[in-house]
Image (cartoon, rainbow, N blue to C red):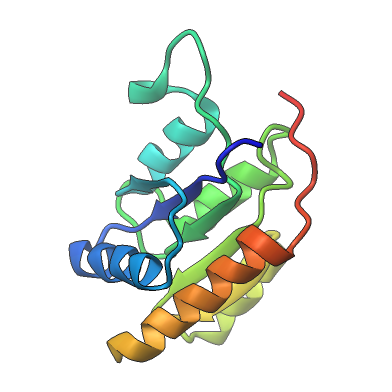
Length: 147
């Protein structure tokens, strides 16, 4: 069985570190690929840019996607993922500090599977990441990936 990769799309170094610490604290040992902006996320998903080569990168089991990103927003990343047959069924969890109703509605309209507001306190954040990871990596039955 292939290792289930997590794609974390996060431009804030503090939030990246907190997410990685929360995964480690929860004993989630899956490979985590971090993209620091929207363009890097799409490059990873589509095997372009620095990820271009003979073999496209393994598709992630889940994408944890921030909305406020440089170069290309999380909404634009989500829109392009859903428009491409290679990535349209990958579960996407919006993990953001935004509680704006329009962001929530837009995320779901574009095909997000879940919308989670980042808790400010680390312990609550760690619990949220643990619950997300356990559900999407262990409980949820993902669609088969035919490449």
